[in-house]
Length: 165
Image 1 (cartoon, rainbow, N blue to C red):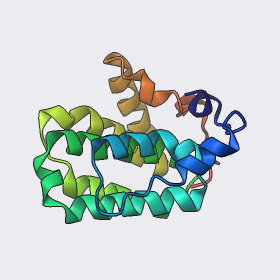
Image 2: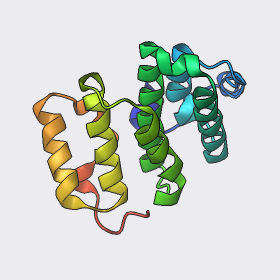
Image 3: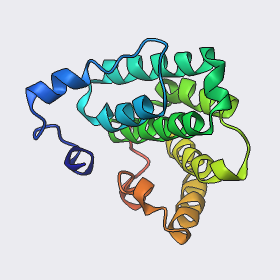
């Protein structure tokens, strides 16, 4: 948690970093793997985050059991948000997030139980598009419902149009 809050990996031991790099699960991903990976993003390199994410999304799409499991859908939706938090913190360009936005739109059901995920994803899309009107709208919506956890890594009011996208 400290690493996510401070955006620094200084407090992570080399042993822990080494263990994190062994998260790869081939085609056998599930809710716990998605959650652990999302937490571990902050300690990984850009290439590792992109590789792990891509592998997790491909595995999810290949395994039809995932699309039938509410828990796995929640896990992959959470992983998508964790990826976008990481991407925003590390100034990814919009193109590096294109696969994630497309994956989310294609695989996450349009159901009330995923509404908060959709609002958070739309906030990040607006951030990457530099659409301040939509950023303000989604930020207010999330603040009204006390979903401020997803705003902690997005200093929306402090960002300006010079942010590298």
